[in-house]
Amino acid sequence: MNAVRQDVVKAPVLPLITQGLVHCYEGRNVLTGVDLALTSGSVLGLIGRNGAGKSTLIRAMLGLLEPLSGSSFVFGESALKLSDDAKSRIAYVPQQPEALGWLTAEQMLDFVGRFYPHWDAGFAKKMLQRWDIQPNRLLAKLSPGERQRVDLIRALASQPELLVLDEPAAALDPVARRELLRELALRAGESGTTVLFSTHIVSDLERVASEVAFLHEGKVLLHCGVDDTKERYGRLWLPAKMTAAAPAQSLSRRRHDDGSLSLVVARDEQGHWPEASTLLGARIDVLGLEDLFVEIAE
Ligand SMILES: Nc1ncnc2c1ncn2[C@@H]1O[C@H](COP(=O)(O)OP(=O)(O)OP(=O)(O)O)[C@@H](O)[C@H]1O
Image (cartoon, rainbow, N blue to C red; front, top):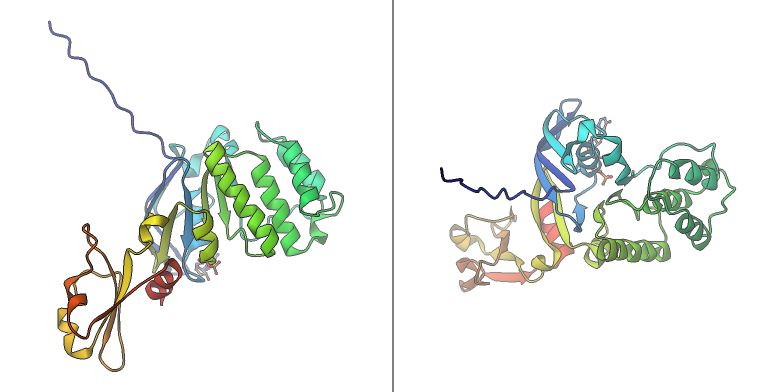
């Protein structure tokens, strides 16, 4: 009998993946079918306008909110039924720091640290000093920026494999913001930490993220490498008499009062813009990441 050898090639387990996520609040759709996956060691910047659903998506991806439908997996486990082992490999910093206001910064970090097998107490102590947080002050008495710093120290000291930050820089001053970004880049580069962070600050995203995802009207409209966005997208403007030549494929299209049309278009595989851009009277402007975001989200 011939034995047939079958090599089973196992797909790598992704740190975070979500499929078909749908959620609504009070009958209003917020997420309308989000698919998103993070590969190991990537740093994904999630952007979208106020109220686009970034926090909702993050919470649903981590199993902190049960979506209407769809599924999320963290390290291969259903996000809604995570084991203690999986939980100890994740750190999440919400937009609004969690309670525990009756503890001092030092007490909170000592307490939380007990739950993490790789807790770096030396790092926590060093960062409290560096970020000028008095260890014996009650969390309730800290300013929002100081409170956010303590939460970031908590997340980083646990040495997570997956770090999820909801607008981590919102309350930070520029110096602390720079230090945080440097720390994120270091973690991703040296320890292979996978990072997901939401932000409105496109320059932060460009500085540290390897990938960007645009959340718009309940869906991820675009998910690509940050470097891939450079020189790749443009705003094509067509005067009113030429709008019939507009390409069918575009990321957004806007009709102006004078009948002219603006579209966000991409270069093809060979690096060419859509043919309409070559017509006399048409205009194409290359978009940087921030302009791309504004054009798509407007
Ligand atoms: N618990 C809730 N009950 C009802 N509506 C909610 C609730 N949480 C969020 N929403 C609404 O859902 C939408 C998405 O909110 P979400 O906080 O996820 O957006 P976001 O993209 O994180 O916004 P921002 O950038 O302003 O932080 C908003 O319109 C918000 O008002």
